[in-house]
Amino acid sequence: MLISLGALGAAVLYAVGYLELKGSIQHGATSKRVNIFSNYAMAAWSMPLAFLALFLPTHPNWESAGAAVAAGASLFMGRICTVKALAKADLSISAPLLGTKTVLVALFSILLLHTPVGWNLLIAAGLTVAALALLQVGPDHNKHHRRSAVGWAMGASVLFALVDVLTQGFARKSGVAFFQPLMFVALAAMTPLLGSTPPAPAAAKKRLLIGGVVIGFQAPLVIMLIGLFGQATLINILYATRTIWSVAVDAWRGEGNAREFLVARSAGALLLLGAIILALVK
Image (cartoon, rainbow, N blue to C red; front, side):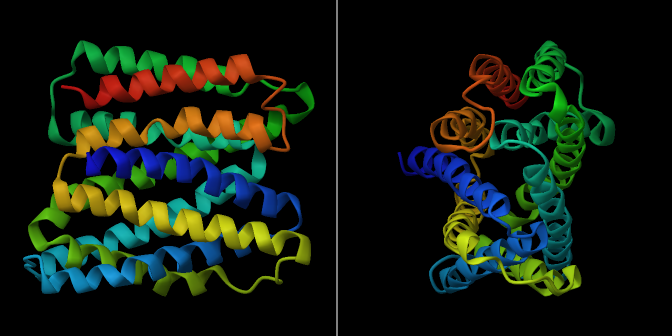
């Protein structure tokens, strides 16, 4: 019950948080400012997890430390791609596209671990292609930005897939109280590499604050659930509902074209959710 509530709650928070970050960009906040603030928020939310070491077994070692730093570096680069995608297109386009990460994890297991190709993954790949096409439905004058958003989102998905693989491989071995804080410390340590950026305008500050705090909370929550309970398949399926929540929230409160193209984008989100479930279920 706790796992289900946590994963579903994180999916809803994902949609709400990114809606606020998208709004802050539309009101003048730079992509870099959004990235910097949300990165530090993630690190801040993750630090209390270190106290779990007082109650949970931890097994720190150099191999796990290296994996945590590598996961933090991948998360850092993936966050850059995520915010770029968010700035280029509506939330109902950019946010669901990040769900392709799960299908990519399955494809990586084939390429790198020589996992047999099953019918479910072949169908998942086909559904993903169809979903990508439907999610891009929108006005002609924004076509270039939508295509650019797809490129940034796919880049983020590849990097986040690597984060998932490293987390599933090492967080359970070393203990989440060791792995996760170190990963987000690495993320925070790399954030100054983004350079300086002007402060967000007054009209954008509130939405940036809300979005950064919400996204900063939900991302470590998902990783913590996987690290503590290990039920990555169930957690990822429930968390994948963010594809639908993102379209629904954007149509409800967004400032783009989600309401006008709701049918096509909802269909794309549902197809992508189906592809994710097929890719996860063995």
